[in-house]
Image (cartoon, rainbow, N blue to C red; front, side, top):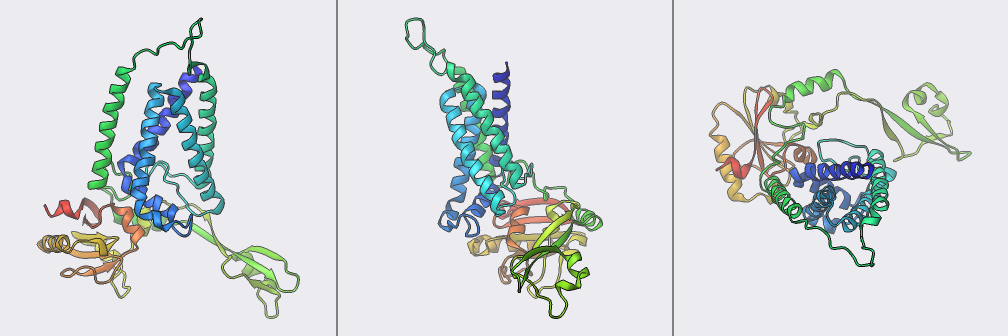
Length: 369
């Protein structure tokens, strides 16, 4: 009873984790790119294969989780999941210890974990899997009284279920790759009021304090002092003080959690640096074309999407990318590439707002059809 319940819980966790990432494989690939970046594992060569690695990881999670649920190939399934958990544990520990990836993406955008939360979650899963391996070890090779391995009962129905599950997951993954995620877990889902979210952020902002690393030039002593104490204590900054701030070692620490939303990064400027965000979210209608990799857009697609958005009479129209001259016939604006990726996964894509509320979001290739 206990081992059956434990097996069910762990299987469901892996299936849910895989499902959330399967819905948004492109988004998960962005997270993989982050791991391969010079700031983390310094393997930029693998960044171009991030989507492939994402598919492999998600497929393993989904199918091994479902096999565990169905109790198929139990020894192989448990062994594989233990290996997968060790791999995840290494990644999350590295992220947490060195503070390089602030969100592992374990449950995509549906549930956010801090690096240490992710690591302890992996340790708990690993412990559960090892316990299951021990509890089920007697069932791996059942023998009769003559020492002959018993023939396992037919698992035909279970394999049919696995096949159906596989087809459904393949369809969901394909939709997310070729279009947009079938289920949008992000803060920019259709129906989101960006203007309203901005107001909530302004009313309840997060507060940070800067901590300075100070080194005594005479004794070599190093202190960590917050900004308030630094200002109060003149000994740290008065003329002739032996204390000097160590460059590059200061740290900004969250002291009060405010209203959390990715909308805080929705900041659009024209190429000269003038803020356009307020104009856009207060417009009766705004049609925005976004690109986070403008050099990868085909000239033909760009021409078609610009022609269609230009036909939107009375709408505020901008082309927003990481480059100042991406668009030819519509006004150019700029936004951080990572923030653009948070809104949608396609490159390019079209976002339509009415009084700051998202009413539509489509890949450009679907928009021009």
